[in-house]
Image (cartoon, rainbow, N blue to C red):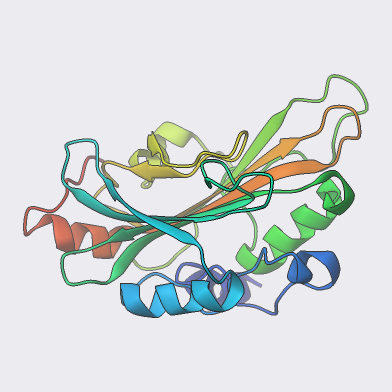
Length: 244
């Protein structure tokens, strides 16, 4: 079982769609982005996005220090022709050699397409294995929080950080989960890290926002950080890598 999840973790670390695509309304809604992965060239990623959402608005974005970070893509709608919030946003962090070290996606669900939490949780567990920091097994019947998060950390050898005895400050990818939000969709942040940690290999984060009345998923974001690629780029001065 351990080897099974290690295999899943290695694939998950490189792509947002490494397993079978979602079915039903999720697939039809354009939630999934087949072929979009860290390590690929930005031109390849842009081609994958264009197949799912033709005509996405593209803008260059900078890091906190003003250096070029990458690009943000927004899927517009008739209700939001300027594309400043939209239904879908994707952020790509691009290294100096043109490869992608960060992929983040935020999704807003209209009332008629909102999935339930159990469906979303199964999707995440099937794709990435047991989280290093799990969300709730099921939603509480009372006092529903508006947002939950889940984290998957992998060291530089691709080994998952287990949840047992988990302390976030001891996580090798602790630094990779903090940073700056580049999403414009409420309750679905795309956090791009400023540093990653010298022992971090891959950091994956999911954030789930709920409709408090229906208890269904109203917004969702998923980010993948290739910390090894980020570190390689930082050696040439394009970023920084923190401790531990």
